[in-house]
Amino acid sequence: MDIQRNSSLGSPSSMESLEKQLSCPICLDMFTKPVVILPCQHNLCRGCASDLYDSRNPYRFSGGVFRCPTCRFEVVLDRHGVHGLQRNLLVENIIDIYKQQQEGGGGGTPTAPVKPKVSTGLMCEEHKDEKINIYCMNHQVPTCSMCKVFGQHKDCEVSPLASVYQAQKAELSNAIDVLVAGNGGLQTLLNQMDDTCKAVQDNAQHAKQKLGECFDSLYAALEDRKNVLMELISKEQDEKVAALRRLARRYGDRLQAGTELTDTAVRVLEQSSAAEFLQTSKGLIAQTKEVAKSSLAEERPEPGFERMDHFSVSTDHLEALFSKMDFGAENDHDEED
Image: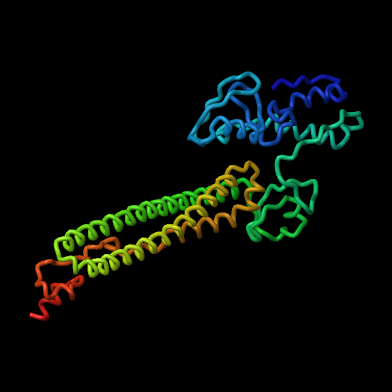
């Protein structure tokens, strides 16, 4: 950046020209620190550069490219993203001097009116002109520097907002991964429920077929008894299928709730404002962890629940015993012998 120094630097037209030189080509306002310098020597607010990078790299792959909005030079970023770009401390110092001169009236020299800066984050409720830029570790809330120096957080331990933002963002990302894994487990259970229902129905149908083949070879007098035994199979089939469907409905409700919570967490994760993110992230992290944990402890049918092979009969009995025929009739026959 070339800034001409001449005797008319304090004039309104010179200050207007300087302000134009210190404006970001993306947000069109004065640079917001930190200011990064691109390989083509043009400057951007780091926040604007991050937004531009994210719009070109929505899936957050390691590294990426975007074009300089001024000269269209292709900027290649490593795995650090825009944080790997070098800060332009000279421009930041000039901005500080410019703002000091604007606030102090430039030593009595008339200055051009300062255009209002559009806020990119939340402002402190107690100190209206202070942007929230730090995080109180004691109270677990974002706050401003004035609250730390003079306000209710003056005796508290604080950390930079960016570092806490990155840490909790990473924690929420991990919680989302666990939640997604839990949702995958629920989906697997639902698939197993469908397969088990089909196995119960197939096995019940197979048992009915075998029973029908046995009774079709017997006398017509056994028809009533056959229907009674068929009813027992149908009853157990209905009970098992009903129990499995109740479990499937519960899993489906849990999966829907987990999916909605996942969508909510992803939307919060994509928020560009650290302060807005931190206002909701803590409770959301706890909620995603709780839902993910509960989804791994669901009730499952016992092994062999789908089996129906205990419904079987033998037709190798005497006709006198047909009226007493039941499932497991071989044992009854042995007892009479």
